[in-house]
Image (cartoon, helix red, strand yellow):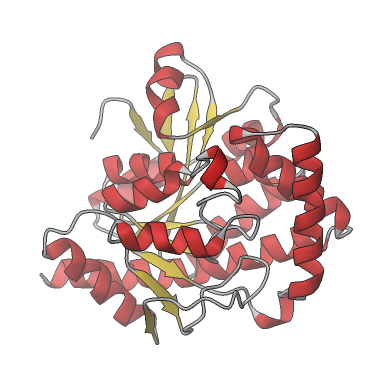
Length: 307
């Protein structure tokens, strides 16, 4: 095990016994949702994973140590402390060297999960190419991580605040398979439809696990993106949420909010504009991803045990 990592007792035992483990990020706790919904959601996701027979491993950096699996006390700390940074790939060495605490983004969570030998990661939506990136060059590190790190990511597509066509083009350029879970449509986070197609569709978790394992058996580095749409009953109207996103983007531009601050700002602004409806949708879509991710982890675990 990497010398910078501390495994919780539950995760350590699961790894030793070769049980399926599912990585969960901490940015959603520290920067993605308000208190107390952030803590409640984090606990719910862990419980969903356990109910399916897998072990949850929420990942964060606390006092310069990578924590794989968080106690209730540590979850509370990540959800309430105002001193929690937001760590991507570039931030990891600095945060660890300085002994700081940080929530891990998709890219950092993938790195930490891979270091620990965890191959399935559940999140809400990945980062991607931001709107106007042709001028700003604002492209999330999540996309390069998907191209280089051997962790499969289950998500509800990319965050709807992004330029989704360019995000898919970027993933194609770097050879990342984008697989729709029971859908041919690339989901747009709050909505099931984006008008964009995925590369391939799978009908169940068994097929998804086979694709993931074969990719790495071939020696093809990088992840697989499993795009799992928000359940229909929780999806928001596309025109309604698109208007809220446009208004939030306008506000961000007016305030000159950029870089790693923009996503938390936009998500919070959209929550206000939709009177909390976007937050409810966010919670439901990530819960749905936890159901699917746990099932895929179990099937992938079976394949490795059979090999």
